[in-house]
Image (tube, rainbow, N blue to C red; front, side, top):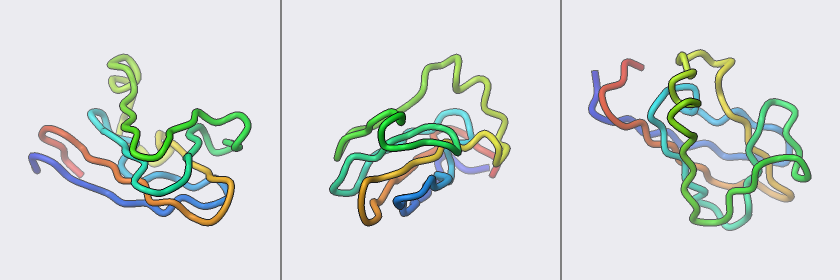
Amino acid sequence: MAIARQFATSVGTTATAIEGTQFPGFLLINNGGETVFLGDSAVTTSTGFPIKVGEVFSPSEMAHNSLRGLIADRLYGRVVTSTEDVRVLLQGRVNV
């Protein structure tokens, strides 16, 4: 059991699974230089939820409670060009 755990994902121009977002209690930050769009595996830059440079995202408590730690629960990200760095921090005691 860990107090916290961190993940880094390079999000590209195709839908990219963001590691760590399948667990309850995560915080996500756009650590890159371009807006990252979040959604499911079919996310696009026109339909995704935008996370601007430096913004932190954490889903509602209800959404957190529905996360089961399964790969199928992961959020996906996509950017317009190049790749962007996204970081995830899991808070609290997490079995990974």
